[in-house]
Image 1 (cartoon, protein in one colour):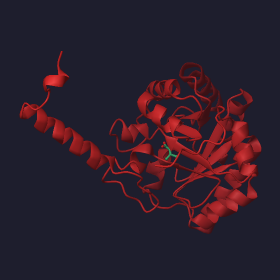
Image 2 (spheres, rainbow, N blue to C red; image 1 turned 180 degrees about the vertical axis):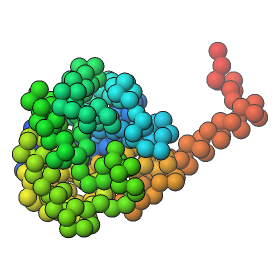
Image 3 (tube, rainbow, N blue to C red; image 1 turned 90 degrees about the vertical axis):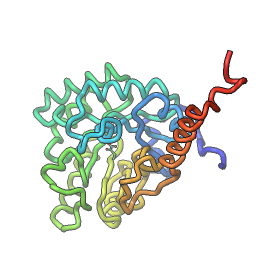
Length: 272
Ligand code: KIV
């Protein structure tokens, strides 16, 4: 494997992400939910680590991101922060912690920042939550937006299919991206939308755009466990698998079981 692409070893800041877009340098982002994985992801040169509420699916086995609590997100984010030296750490605000009203949104945002020690927060939605986004930014907390397929709204959408294929939804998405950008968001995730729409937003908005299932953008994000091939059942078109850890881990664990049962493990060297 070639050396890891870390051009600048300094801690990544939101300001640097803006510079990267201006200089045409791509931003690499991945999720992580725990200390050990965060250390590996950070050491491999990822610029932004997202403590995604996808932890609800990946770590807890829930069908959606809705059940994860603020306490659970803080636990995951704290664990990740302890493992990271360089990457910017962004934590998702979980469902229900910012949709009720602006005051509650700011209170919960402040709580996550104080307890998790992460660098920034991510919220799903555009116009509907713009006052809350502005208030969180006014409190000095960097915000990443998230538009397109926003999993916290899955019960409204009813499906995980590609969003914004229709003109009206595409126009709203561009309007929302401009609103989030003008409000001062440092980045915007665009999930599962047509590539032509992602390209338009990247062109028309100065804020770095991070795609997932949206084609080329200023940067890309994937769920770590998906790109490592740990989940055999999830294979959307946009996912590139960089490893087959499901097979590697199952083989290793299967070998361990066989070694214990055959009394091959532990051997003479493996005891005191
Ligand atoms: O929670 C998450 O992992 C996310 C990514 C899919 C962008 O929001």
